[in-house]
Amino acid sequence: MVETALDNLKPPPSSKLLGWHLLDARPKDGWIRIGFDGKRDFCNPAGFVQGGILSAMLDDTMGPAVFVMTEGKLYTATITMTVNFLSPARPGPITGEATVTQLGKTVAFVEGRLMAEDGTVLATATTSARLVETVKAIAPASLRPAALPA
Image (cartoon, rainbow, N blue to C red; front, side, top):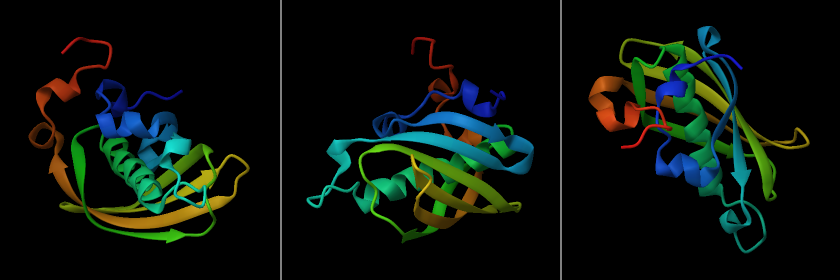
C-alpha cells in the first residue's frame, strides 16, 4: 500500500469506533478509500445502519482525502456537509471513497460516497471544509505513531 501522512497520525477514538482503516490512497489525486465496520450496534430499529453513523463515516473519509493530498500539512474542519442516502445500509463491511474536487487557500471541497460490500452505493456526500494547519489543529501527542506510548 502507498505511504501517506496518515501513517504518522494516531487514530482518534471516533475513528476506532467506526472501524476506520485505510484501504488505498492516491495522495497526488486527492483520492482515498477507507474501510469501516458497519456494526449491528450502529443499527436503527429497522435493522439498518443509522444515517448519522453513515454521515460520520463520510466525514471520516472526506477529511482524510485532504490530509493525504496535503501530505499532512492541512487538517479539515467541516463547514457544511450534504448527505444523500440512496440505499439502506445493512450491517457489514462498508467502504468509503472521497476525492478532493478543489483545494483552495482556506477551504476545500470534497465529494464522497459509501458502498456496501457488493458495490451498492449507500450514500453520497459533498463537503466544504475549512483548512487549518495541522500543527495548530491537532495536539502533538496525536501526531505520534499509534505504536508509541503516550
